[in-house]
Structure formats: structure tokens, C-alpha cells
Amino acid sequence: MKPKRYAAVGLAGALALTLIEPAAHAETSPGLTLAQQENCLSCHSVTRRVMGPSLHDIAARYAARSDASQYLAHKIIEGSTGVWGAVPMPANTQVTPDEAEQLASWILTLK
Image (cartoon, rainbow, N blue to C red; front, side):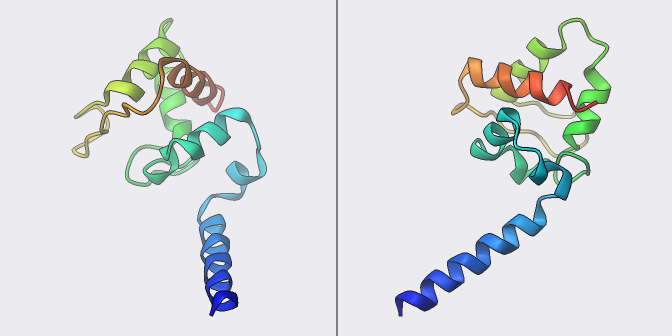
């Protein structure tokens, strides 16, 4: 039974990797790793809209703001509603302020 279980887990992992776009998977930046660990990619993709906007679109929208990194870090932790449509972004209370700042800074590099 154990070999079948491991095969199922391996197959599930391989399927999950195919769902992440190649550009995001090929890039092994600390920002991407943190986004994966904090489940950001459950609702966002680097290059395409999923449940939420693509991280590229977020970067493009906010890049011109002088406080973009702080603004995004706040939105990551506190969540938001109505900014990108009807689906709210829930608060991510598990993310520390330092992690939110790292994520925001990385997202802004994607523009």
C-alpha cells in the first residue's frame, strides 16, 4: 500500500507544478518562495488572473505610487475589498510585517 500512496503523492505534486506557470516556477527568487509558502499563489498567479489579479498587474497598477511597498504590505496583512472586483482579499494574519514587506517589494519587481 505504501508505494501506491507515494505514487499518488508524487502525481499530485507533479500536477500542482504544471499549474504554476513556467516563468514563475523557473524563477527561484526568495519572493516567489515566500509567496508559495504563504499560499499567495492559491488565489494569484504571477502572469495571469486567477481568483485575484496577477501579481504582474498589481505591480503595474501600484508601481508609480511613492508608498507602493508600504501600501501593498498593508493590503497583504489587512486584506481588502472592492479594489479589484467583487472577490475580497482576506486578511493574511499569519504573515509578519517583515514578510509582507518582502512580498510587496518582490511583487513590485514584476512590473
